[in-house]
Length: 198
Image 1: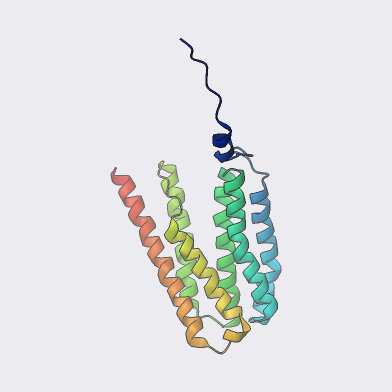
Image 2 (image 1 turned 60 degrees about the vertical axis):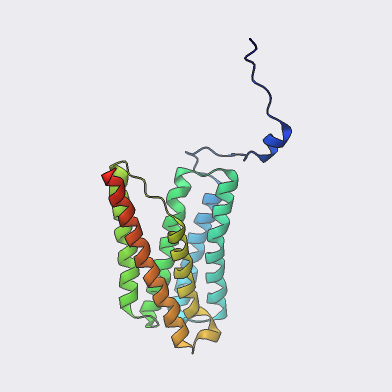
């Protein structure tokens, strides 16, 4: 009986994803983009805190928001890693919380929505860490990705010069982002509760 493995057809080989990095890799292009985002965030947040709405701040913030999708795409192309799964959401939290705090220092945003966003991000991070120690994995879902996108949009609304005098629109985007932030936290808690029961 011939048990030799048949070679994979060329079409199947072409369709199979090429994994360039193992799960334990750290020095990857996706992680390099993530680190570059954090480094670019430092002067951007200083600029926001000093000047508020400006075209330069708006463009830099747009670059930071868009590169979130870029490093995710590169990670999926080359192979996702444990380091990337940790660094990418951490970078998003640094950017979003930093943006809210910079606007809060200026008085552009009240501290109530800032406290809700920061409290949610910190609380859920602790909750996921504790759940992970019990062997419960709570990866981000689509709702969490929408939440991050709206948080970036909320900060951007206060940086885009044409919206500087359109307070109702800025506040609408801000509070929709806050609502989705809290909703995604409830979803995470619900999933964790369900996992503990199974």
